[in-house]
Image (tube, rainbow, N blue to C red):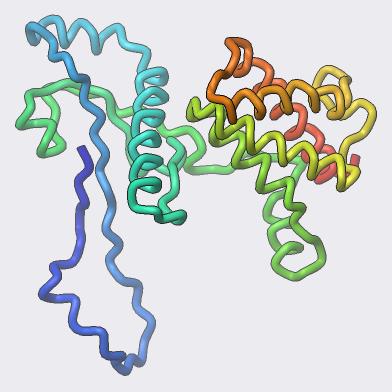
Length: 240
């Protein structure tokens, strides 16, 4: 269930005619509440309470994000809007796991719930990569973005979402772009293997994706290959 909170009423939005302004005051920003509800209800409130008491809250939230992103992906495809983006848990303002009646869920309320700290919000982690410095360099034109960087990010997003066919096709182009840019080094993989050693496995997965018959070991092969590409790009960012 998706609910928009704090959205301005349409009758107050005004027309499309430009208007003069003298200040740039911040506008109220609507937020969206996403509630992932299990299809099968708990038989009793006691069973629901027992489930919550023993639930792996991090695992529940991770599964909820997968479900939400599946819905967003479906919306992007159905609306043919490439700018509908998926989300990560770190972007949540608040995350809760709990149970309640149907009416409570619709209103964003619970019979009982646990609020889980969102990892990634608050104080940033220290990193040798200094993404802020590279961001400034990219904006200032002192560095350029390799096409492979975006392709690897897309492959990772597809892989994490379980879209193996899309991940295989993205990874196929990504590894060719990396090799063409000479990013790969002889020991660019996490285990010391070269990127070129993943080329055949990725090509086989991409060809299988086109035929619609992905073998059972595709996910593991893609995970290893995408991780190797990420490692190669990380080494390049660090100047290794």
